[in-house]
Image (tube, rainbow, N blue to C red):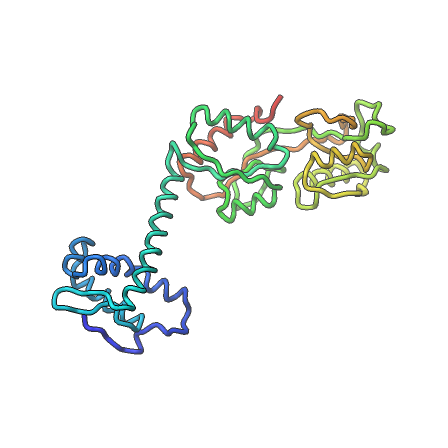
Length: 317
């Protein structure tokens, strides 16, 4: 393998690092094989490539790097100082690739693979633990990477490839996503126990037009639903506080900071009264969403099928 010194063929030291990496990557395993055997013919046999192909690849690698990686001794070769330095990094890179390949294969395993699953904060106390418990009765070794967040953030997680599936509300309608309605959850007007409306069981939302509200921050699905319901009732809510957790809002209602439209609590909270809203119809749809045209691994497909089988029976009674 004659070392060619053509400066026109070399990658410029000041050139783009990414371009250099892409150019060098296909030849790194070849280089490691020759370095391990110190014999081009033997390396070609182990790598199952023609010797001429391997020789040309090593010559081009040296030409592109602009350094001699091997010293030639007849039919054998040995690493130069530059070659030993390069080999240490190449072995680390190949090791990382191998570990990454093993990881993605493990994540796709039908029995022990992984599902990246997102869900709303209000689903975390009871709904999602119950779902996972039921699913794992038949798939005990499937692993989950769980993300608890608000709806828009989870949809971005789907688009970024960080999530496989998410439980969200409202059910999204976007061309790059597939979404299926699973269930519906009634919303209640939560008022302090000493509030003027606390003796009521039912209320029209318009009767709370003069109240101060505590709500979730803009971007949360429940905030959008709250704004839409108040608009339908003929008013724009006066906001005293915007938070990130429904149960934080319920605590602030108990403290007298305002009223809130919230889904039912997992455990009844003292200090508040929860009123049924008769008009407009106060409910939110809960759905599952995933990215369109993305192939499912077997564990993701199994969990998706399980979630869809829970239509109408997703939420605790």
